[in-house]
Image (cartoon, rainbow, N blue to C red; front, side, top):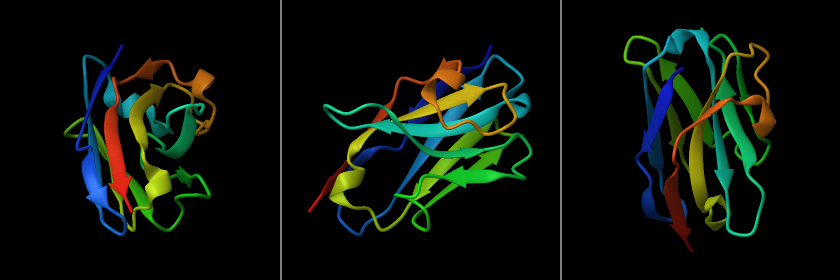
Length: 124
């Protein structure tokens, strides 16, 4: 199955932007629905965004709608999360995840492959 490696996290001031990337290897990337999740200290991992295998469907959490954009490149086997207008409450470890399910699930248990995570810290 596919393996995932995230990059692009860091420290940014409120109102700033970051672009997260997730590189996939070892599987048929184009057959997976890809998602981004995040987990803040002391909180459960939560859904952020997901994109279907052909990019025909995208889904966002209400908390990031209008600020974050998910995209994928099936040639380069990568998925990205462009994060604009960042807020301190966006601070978390961000995880890339993959699922063979086509209905863009939002539950963590429906994703079978996970990256190691990348830290995003937004200062006020």
